[in-house]
Length: 209
Ligand code: URA
Image 1 (cartoon, rainbow, N blue to C red):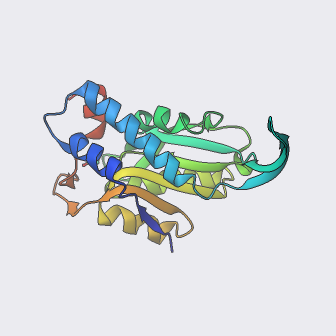
Image 2 (image 1 turned 135 degrees about the vertical axis):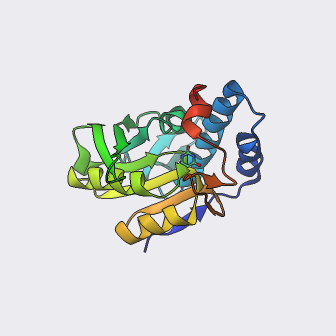
């Protein structure tokens, strides 16, 4: 069963409040999403493997630790996921960035992939899928399907706000994928918006309606 990690660090919760606030304008919204993404990246990288190397300090020789060079890829789900990429890259600057675009088929209401561009070495990388909102979970489940079909083995899903329905959808379809969130909200409303949520993440990030 996928584990769910709620990052309840005070800085994340503080910034998330202003992300939710409808009076927060596009510029500040974008900056806050970027900052929270960086803070979440700090938490999500806690289990990164280390190896010991020997270095010379000005005083002596010391055995110390460095990252053991695990290959990471960040994959935003278009379009709102793009708002989280730079924040994560601040802490993992060597990560590759793939993109997945999905639209909702008007008849089946199921997400259909219209774009996917991933690093060539999919099988060797650990993936972090980013999307600010985990609502029904349809897009998240399809994005994970898409990565797995191409050979990805180690996938994490990171979002700002999740609805219980979305968490359940990932847990049922992809029990090997852990979920990292800043807040677990109450429910979805009849229009598919997370309640209390933050509105349409893509529109608020890009200033569209
Ligand atoms: N996508 C959004 O941008 N907001 C929601 O509340 C749900 C899905």
